[in-house]
Image (cartoon, rainbow, N blue to C red):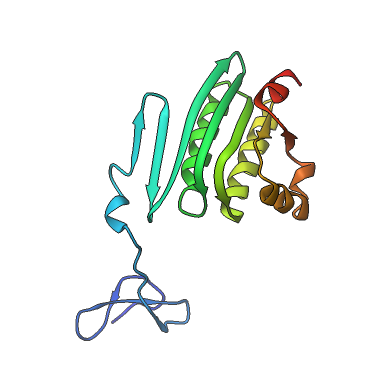
Length: 167
């Protein structure tokens, strides 16, 4: 007997079939660049972490550490495929005692809702430890999204890394 609603069921021909919660067949999704995902997809080289998932790339580089403050340069796209890696890297810094994080987003070309969620999670954890996440290099389109979602009231936005560090 076949279980309903479980991804990876087999049909009568032995082919894998994905089903939704009602047990209806749904098309199988194919991910571009799937060979990049999995073991080795995240590679660390001298303080720079690369996340290559589904053809997208994101980098995080720790530029400066001083006491409880750290400056992290983020580049590429922050989306549903890379937001988890960003959250993991930044939360590890907070848990390691760097509660004042300055995220330089000048190299970020795209950030979706998953990326915003990762930034909110990091900010919340930093605030629990008496710190905050400060954003610099935010592009006008990203500022507009922050304003529309009212996240501009949650995050401190700065024009430069030096301004964020001195406040």
